[in-house]
Structure formats: structure tokens, C-alpha cells
Length: 309
Image (tube, rainbow, N blue to C red; front, side):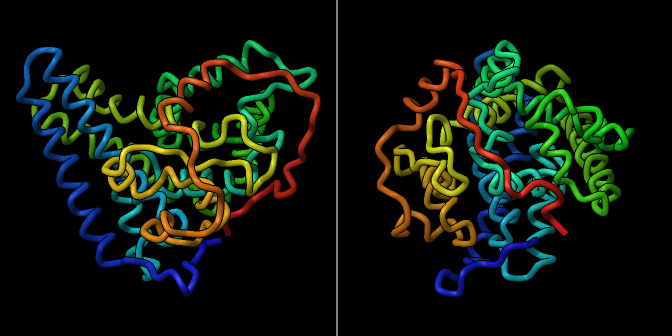
């Protein structure tokens, strides 16, 4: 299930490659600088820089997940795999997770702003607040170790107690297990080499990476919180500063993306799909601190099972 761009909205392949090259160069430069700064202010500045640049990088690898980074499949996946190393995460794992998100969105299997009869409310609060504070990214980063050393642990039976995680794991295609294992090893190896090669102390290196982890995780549900329980319309476009919109490759035009997921990023802003953005990005983030709410409305996931063949 690799999507292809709609013919009326061509993929800006050359532009995407140039942007991706700048992103990778900037990320490496930031990590290099981490070995040459001193003091909390310098580390904080680099963490913010890495967060902004890697969120842009994530927006580009997100294009790769949808097959809209480059017209040629090998180039599309290769650049996506490279950018995912700086997440760090296996591209073929997060791609399956993301495409599954488009199918599970706002169903009972993926409604983090609600808890249902029989569910543990405290656990749902922990999930949402963990997402808002960067713990979601940390879980994904730590999963690299599991994916590399014990991929057999990434199975539905080990997560049956948590519905969203079980639905995600159920959707993973075993044929990609070896490739995911290799990508996880490559991600860990790359960051070990950069940390040692640039002479960055481990706590400082992690702090810089967490600049991205916090930003990315904190905004993961901002585009879906308190939206209709509909797989397509359960998203919203968010207002933000124009330069940030360009840096994030129009990622905040999220309802447009969910309605037309095969339209490349460069066309999303002018796409006549969803309603205009009303809420601001920061306001939407703050609203999520209200926490999950109890509901008895049930929305079945109609696309359970393996999605990426």
C-alpha cells in the first residue's frame, strides 16, 4: 500500500531532494555543535534548533510515507529511511504506523481524547499527558532497541491491555520485520557514531535530540483533539506563522491532508478541501491539557489488520 500522488498535483521531486539535503546537513551541523557548546543556554538553543529542523525533516519523511516525496519508489523510500535515522526510528515501522493512523483515525482504536466504559481513566490521562510532554517520542526511540534485539516482543499479545497499541501492532506486516531490525540498528549505530565522533557527552546529546522529541510528541494530537469521530473529517487545519508553515511543509493544513492524503505538501495550502483554519497551533496544544473525557459513543475501526503489503 504505497500511495501515489494525484496526477493533477505533481510531486516536486527535485525540490524535495534539495530540501532533504539541507535538512540532513543542518541536523548534522547541530549535533556537531553540541560537542562545542558549554552551558545550559547553549544546549537549549541547539535543542530548539534540532527540534525545528527535525520537525521539518519529519514533515519530509511523512511525504515519503505517502509516496509523495519523489516519483521513483527507491528514491522516495531511500530518502525517507535516511531522514528517519535522525528521528531516530525505522522508516518502515513508522510508515506502517502512520498509514494505519489514516485508517484508524478517531475510531475507538485511536481516540486519545476519550475513554470508554471499562477503560482505566488514569491510564488514558497518562497516555495523553505523556504525548504532550514528549514521552510518546521517548517510547518510539526506546523501541529501536526492542526492534533491533528482540523484535519478537513487538507482538499484539504483549499489548492486549492497551487498545490503541494492540491495533497498531495488529496492522504491522511481518514481511518488514528484518528490514525494520536493520533500520533500527542503523539508527542506533549512526547516533552512537555521531556522539563519539563529535565528542558530545551522552546527556547533552540526548537533550538536543529531545528538543525534537518534545516538539514532535507535543503536537502529535493537536490536529485531532476534539474533532468529529470520523476517519476523514476527524482532523483540523491550524493557523500558525507563515514561515513556520513553510518550515513544516504545510503540515498544519492537516484536515486538507486527511481528506486528500496523496496530494504533495506544496499543494495543500491552496487545496479546496477542508474549511479554513480557525484555531491556532499553540491554543490547540494548550486545550489538550483539559485531558480525555468519558464517552459512551463507539466508533468501530473498519480497517483492522495488515494495511501495508
